[in-house]
Image 1: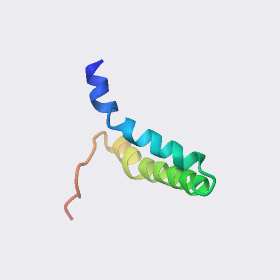
Image 2 (image 1 turned 180 degrees about the horizontal axis):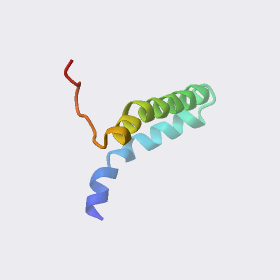
Image 3 (image 1 turned 60 degrees about the vertical axis):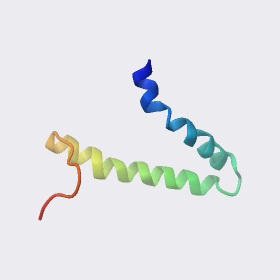
Image 4 (image 1 turned 60 degrees about the horizontal axis):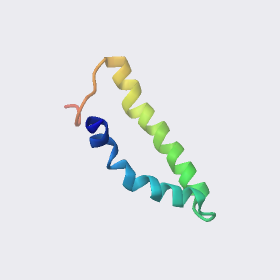
Length: 63
């Protein structure tokens, strides 16, 4: 339980902020578009290369 809480505790700060933005009439569309855009970018930049190579590259690859 402590191991999971160690990684989940920082999220408790952001969850209320995201909830306020999602339920705010003026920021709802921006928040949802931003969240989807970040998710798509994360999939293409992190998950697909990690799946193809079998490892996660930290930092910038040398030229």
